[in-house]
Image (cartoon, rainbow, N blue to C red; front, side, top):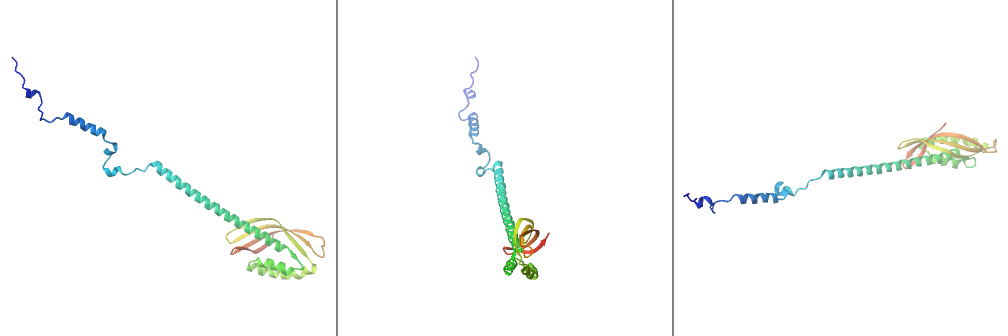
Length: 205
């Protein structure tokens, strides 16, 4: 008769450690653990990553703001420059009419109008010329009415400008009672003094 196996050798003791079930539970805990819990310590989970797309959008916005600011500045500068050109051409037209217009009955008033819009240097030159011409104009009972046909800006800096003008003069005197037209082309230099542009030189061309 075969020996009966010892029951203690077949069945495990209840007080021996059971390894299979704890290993299964550990695996379940690892699978159930959130992804963030495996990334590192707790404080690291609070940091937010800056995405490259966010950086690119910020750079584009800054570039657009800079471009808009530059464009606005350029537009403003162009408006200021255009305003200055208009002021120079307007002054040159008025002064050309004053220079080419006179009446033998009101010469002092005519000459004073020119001198009031002249620089100190040109005012002295004009006074000498007008004094020499006064007697001749009165003797001939001459009159002249000037018209600016065309004016163009030749050059301009912050304090100086040169304007080319085409001027017609309708002249009458004792020798020519019927009006005649004299056409003149002049080159006028203007000098800025404060907020005014003054005649500084006249050249007939």
